[in-house]
Image (cartoon, rainbow, N blue to C red; front, top):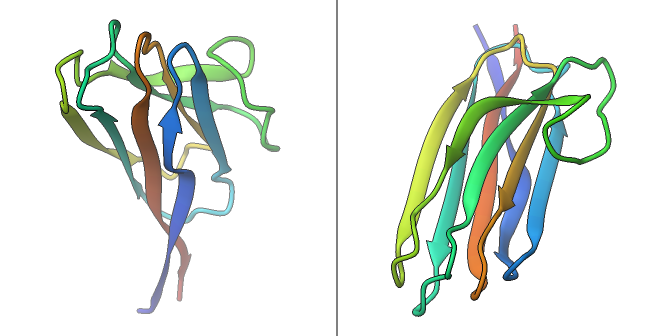
Length: 129
C-alpha cells in the first residue's frame, strides 16, 4: 500500500504585530486520512502585555470560506491555547485532525504591547493506493 503525504503551510513563520490577528486556512476536502497540525507561538525578549492565543477552527463547507473569526462559517474546533506573557515563552501544540474535517483555519490573536512570532503547519494524507 502506497501513501502520498504532503506538508502544507497554513501560516508561515511570521510576526503577529501587537493588536493584530493572523489567520491561515486550508481546504481539506481532498484529504483521505487523519492529518497532523502543529502550531507555535514564541514571545520576544519582552513578553506581550496580553498573550497571543492560537485557535483551531473548522467549517462545514464544500468550498473554502473566506478567512474570519468563529461565527457563521468558522466554528471553534480546539479552544485557544497560549504561552502566556513571559519573556521568550514558547507554546508548541499538536492536534490530530480527522478526515471528516472539510475546511481548517488557524487564528493567532490577542497579543498587545509586543509582537510575537507564530506559525502553523499540517501534514496530510492525500492518496492511499
